[in-house]
Length: 279
Image (cartoon, rainbow, N blue to C red; front, side, top):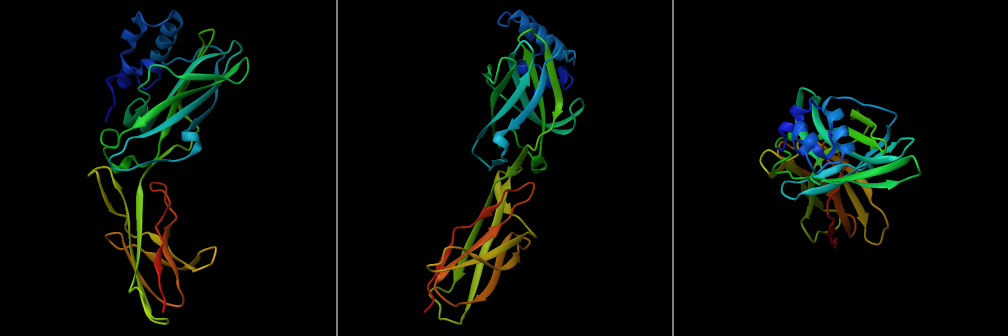
């Protein structure tokens, strides 16, 4: 988990790209312009100043961020802000916890030194930062699945600063899920019983392995050979290990699959279909 000492030093406020270094050091750094030094100093003092306003923040283009056990996932945070003199730059990060000043248990921010700002008009711009989440270091526990909060900041061309610790957002980080289907016996005589098994598993960030998602409703669907769409046959509940099993009567050649609708912590997933030859 890369929760840096900077967060404590800034008392939960934003200091743009200077998050990676202590606020006092950043404010004195020779690589910063005077305007940036002023902005960092204001952020360290937890002050918004002037008429810069943050109007919208969009995380991952409005989609959930789905993370497995090994692969790093990259996503963007777009900060739209306005100032009569125009927008100089903006930044944002995700945080998890109950209070940004005293209770943060997860933090995801950009490692890049610069953001990219695109002018909307003379007074408004959208600044985009890229964030990479690594399940091995950033997501140390499954409690981090679900809703995350967003903190954002923006600086006007005149040096004015706007910052918000909890921007309105639907940002969610979810545990990647897998779903399987296997119908037996194959082939099967018409009218005989088919057993359709499967398994619903999801990433366990604590162990870096996949584990069964238990007591979840999963739909069993069927599509007759030559048909264009699936029909739901029944709903099956996963057992204590995430396994699925039910029986149906074989009627005609066709495809079976399981479909999981998803939850706040786990995305929807559809298994690969299993074709059954009915004789």
